[in-house]
Length: 393
Image 1 (cartoon, helix red, strand yellow):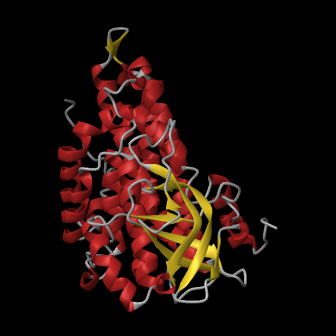
Image 2: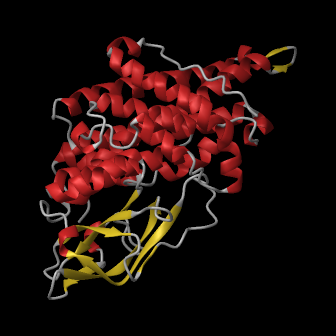
């Protein structure tokens, strides 16, 4: 069994910006990851299986909906605490963080923000504890970056039900989720959110096989074949793309923090290896090119840490914009992907083995840089924000 020797880099003493509660939350999740995730994650990745036994622990830690008020089962924490949780979970594995951030940002958040009181009471406590798991249905086989063109739809069945038809794909948690928050067009072509429950006739969730990335995460499709859904399951307080896009902003915020955790893990492994690996009669860390790579890694990690902290402050104050969140998500993904690649090269052949976490992070990040808005879409969001000109149409 591999021993987790991770030591967190903090070159600019960013910890001094955190409260005692933030540090307690982060360190609690960090120790849980070392104990429960690190020993099993390489095998889970190799076998392409989701380690479902971790769900109970994630619920007990409060990683599902940590910013949801306590009266609905959430943690009632601020957004910096949430970000730190995601950082530590993704330091363990992107798939683990995905499971938690989908549950909190893409399932619990829309139910809390746009749902009825009855929906909140029915679903949120069970989702917070992990008794129920959820997934988020927006992306379709032919409609990814352009969700407004979705074809999944529902029509009034003339009684207390609507009939839902269509399909979604690339859905994290789909194979085992008890509920799905699905975005579909009503008969007027207006996008609405609707909660679909496991067991409804015509609702299936085939698993996506053959992934080279996020192998320890369960991914699947959502297929709706004349599914009768109670009208009481429609989210009453939002219409249009505002609903799913606000969910994505919440998820992107968590990703901005999360991937820095993966970058920190790659840097830590590469730094330790550079001091131990001897070539030409000295540690490879003594060579200029190795030091250049390590210095650039810690510089980019530090910049991302500071950006995420500032974004968290703005989010706590209700001032963070979707464009700012897009910038942080894009930046964090870009630096994490480069750090993983450079760290892999430093380890040579050992870098592709499961003895080190780097290749696993590297493969995972190839998905994370694409999902919740591709790298290019986030660049265009920033471009539109600073120029006022729309490059999408």
